[in-house]
Image 1 (cartoon, one colour):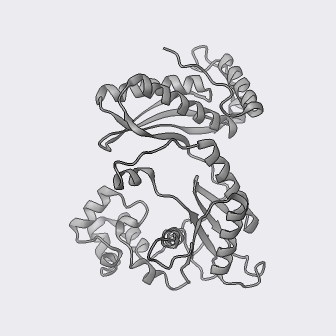
Image 2 (cartoon, one colour):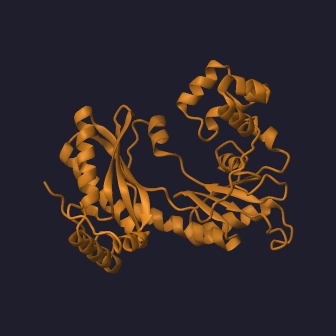
Image 3 (tube, helix red, strand yellow):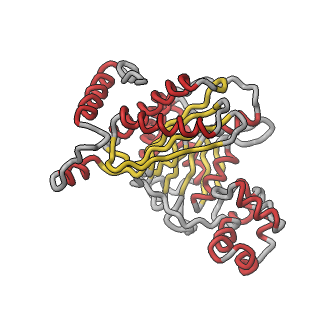
Length: 361
């Protein structure tokens, strides 16, 4: 959350919503409706615009999670308490977007993120949407969490830690740094020692460029039909390619993610010789990857996703093309790019569902 862990740092983690995978695990018989992605993206931009009224240092970690750094704004807000500023942020977001967000504050991104999870109003709790951890209170705050609550401590790492008798932050705090390093090695031992104490030196990065663009869909009912999956894949590839062009980017790698009915998650990727941004190429590559995944394990699917990565700016490609001839065997043609531009123009005028490519055989 902050450029340093100084006591003067004023920073917040803002987020909402439960991951769909967790929701389905908790309620396996739930009916899941499709997500209106365009509306979600629009609301996400609106939230970011509101946060930027309070500080220019806004980092978007996902569509519903933001970090902001308010270091140095004390005089601007005339020394008001962090919780009061956080409530004004929350009220401003609600007024502009009609959405309710939870706001957590602390001296690091880690503490702010965990504080935001505590801030969420729940039945039987006094949480009101804001939770601020005062400077110096980080250690006591961290004691309430399991190690699984800390970002980047995934299932495999959890299993390793459990074998050492480490399941909670309190378990870790009973051991010296040298002991943890002896058990886990220098990098992981030192990392865990700091995280258990709420220490996170990562700075808020307002200008951080996306490393990937992805679209996925959790189905209301598991899908087993290949044609039905291919039709859903076309829509996802179309939206991912559209996001690429909106951002002025091209991608070299296409990845397809498939989550089976038993929650087994699999993925396959292909890196292309030249960067692309047309929905035709993204879909054709993604469809071949989907066929590969389906051939390896043919069971009903719960979730399907498409991601594009190894992103570069389109103006960089233009500069390179002045020096290097475009290969004749490039997957993406000038005709593809023209059609994509036409589709974008029609959608800008008549809406996101006005025009799209038909699925080939």
